[in-house]
Image (cartoon, rainbow, N blue to C red; front, side, top):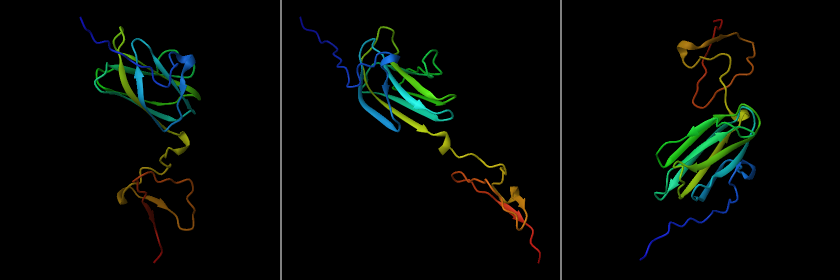
Length: 173
């Protein structure tokens, strides 16, 4: 009689089995060769400022069991965002409503647990780095050009990405 045991070796982030042992992640970061074993949960913490945009992607590798991902605000509690599909990829995105450690919980979709190797990618766009339209938008074409007066200085204008700003000025001949 022979049988194969489904072995699972804990990864180097253990112990991180609850919110109190959550491992700090400093974005941008991609954590590779992580393992989820049985009913064990893996927890991570990401420090965010109010207004920061967080994107987290979990990719299950090598046909392992289905994993899910929850994002909790500072202090834990009820998940702010849940990613619970049956696919090999889960993704959450969130704009922080307040400052503090936001918690990521990785767990088996099946209540009986499951073993899987996975990768976790964490990215943050700081509120200060996000580009906001200026007060003159929309002014993105010659038909939407905004009037300005000669000799007047326009302040606090922004151009974001491929955005164009058009202006119209009357000149004496």
